[in-house]
Length: 122
Image (tube, rainbow, N blue to C red):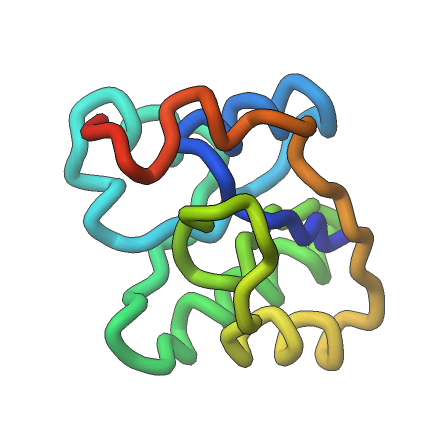
């Protein structure tokens, strides 16, 4: 199953984990270098994604997780929203949907943009 969500807060992956249960998040590679976040992403089976290019390897890794019966969380805009509105989707999410067949839209809790928003340093 693919969980697709608007990314409003630094805490969205943790909130999603509490709400959705276990999943492998797709996260930018630089997050894996941050001490706590890198460890947490590794524990979740996170897939490192290079945002500055089309990361075919990351998409293949996510497809492998899905074909093994795992669940993937993706924020298809590639970054947090600054105003709470959905932005344009990057093509990676559509590749996962086409190759695996299913997606579930799971919006973050209302107001999560006010908790550790993109304007705050983490």
